[in-house]
Length: 109
Image (cartoon, rainbow, N blue to C red; front, side):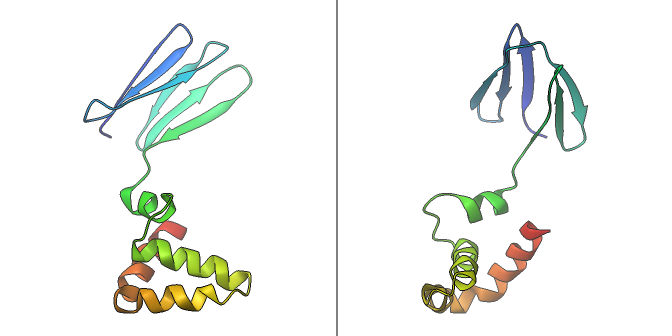
């Protein structure tokens, strides 16, 4: 949506809206197919899909995130393992629990 893909020789470069640069190296030639929400990358052996990650998803899974939605996800993980830390996390986000659930539902589907 807001980045540009460039490919030559064995390197695929993605340049973001603020000049951020990500490089991917390939051992074989690839073909790029633009899609409405990303780019399909085809080679002789593989097919990959390069897609922008929504900020709401990033805020949940970012290492060290203390946002309510990240703590809710962590609480779910602890609950599944029958760990009491699940309750501690839920108490921490008590006031923002409805918002965390709303965002969490969007990211899980």
